[in-house]
Structure formats: structure tokens, C-alpha cells
Length: 120
Image (tube, rainbow, N blue to C red):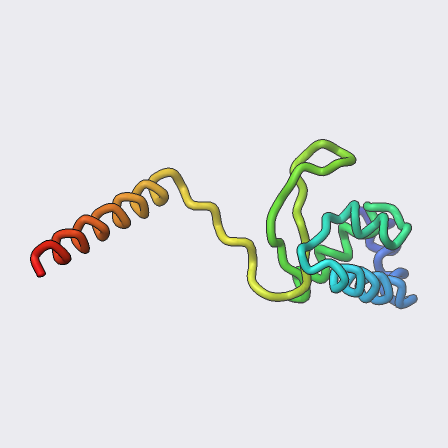
């Protein structure tokens, strides 16, 4: 980070603008329990997206927001994070091996239950 960027952030923090923006971001996210992208939050607050993304990162580090999913951004066409207030993170995606193991386990469990049912 450049010295000028650091000075700008320090100035915003000292002025209370960052805290106000974080508060406003949290209020907007509270109105949408299914979550919003940074672009959607920026639209709702009528501020540039690059003003919102750092505030979301700060709220994330504070444990106040969570990443609940991803989806294709309507503006950029790239995948973007869907943010929501507090709670737990989006579940880690299972690898192909883990999914195969789970499927095999479930299948073996069903076969065992069928055998036990037929024996009784």
C-alpha cells in the first residue's frame, strides 16, 4: 500500500467516515437476509463499489459479515461474493473424492439397513 493510500485511509478513519460507511453497509445487509454483492450494496447506498469493498473486508475481519455464496456479477460478468450479516461461513465445497466417499457411505448404509430389515 502506498503512503498516500495509507494517509487517505487514516484520514477517513479519523473523520469517522469509514465507521459510518461500515454501519450503513451493515444496515443494508440487514434488509436482505439472502445476502448481497458489493455492487448491490453500493447501488443501494449510491456510492462507488470500490468504496464498499474495503468496508465489507473490514466488517468481515471484525466478524460482523459472512460470505454465504458466490454468483455471477451482473456488472462484471465474473463470480462475486454474496455477503450477509454475521453467522457462519458458506460451507466448503467438497472435493470429488469427498462426494464419492459420501455417496459410497450412504449406499453402504442403505444396503446394511435393507439386510437388517430382511433378517428381522
